[in-house]
Image (cartoon, rainbow, N blue to C red; front, side):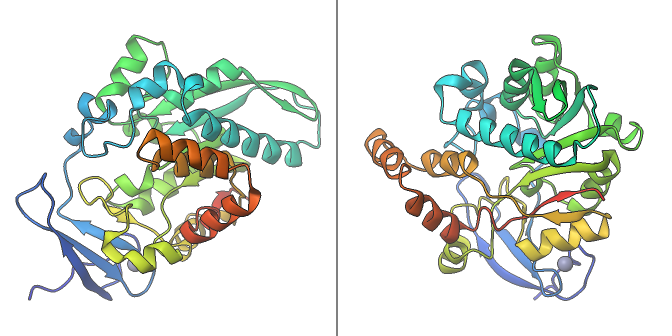
Length: 307
Ligand SMILES: [Zn+2]
């Protein structure tokens, strides 16, 4: 048997094969490697970025549970709205806690991995963040590799940059950086976290969400866990993996309690409209949401701030 490769998150050689998965989309099986030092789980082979084409964003690609184009065009009519509102509320609370001196300057927000641009559009429509010292205008920038990034630039006038462009930006360019369900698509997460850490202002917030492979549900399901989609989710994290990556990049882990982000995740996986109605009703009960949060470990995944 060929030895497991070095960990793509921490570089350790203490890795082992966790299992393999065959998928209809690929002739060769995908192999999962687990790191004994940082709990990172990574997939080989890595699918090229060309998988993020128009079909992917329309929900006709490898992730049929989302239609990013519909969410972009009319996010107010989709479940995604609760996620966007939650992210803005979390960022607002964070800025308010640090807003001790009057500042009416704009809030610079980078949406890293902006995809079809739904969050960018929501933030542009929101226009400002109400801090203790007044309303601070929101200035948003996106970044992505997909076919949509060009379109967001040319058709909707968004400021969307490539990873190379971001690397040229000065230190401390952003008050908030969001990376929503993005890091699992990136083969080597450490340089990306270091770049985002450098781009954050002191006190700035990295709002990062990704699946929790240490959650009770993930442990129970193993590689059958719904988040294991090896064509696109090539890097899988536990809270400990994230905390270590943050620490190595000079960031401080920050715990966040999600509401709308969690609601969206629950409704996204509902399947039929009938089940979605039932889940929407169940979400009125805080105990139900707490139970799901516990089972999937959503709020257990830390965000980070720059000291
Ligand atoms: Zn590792």
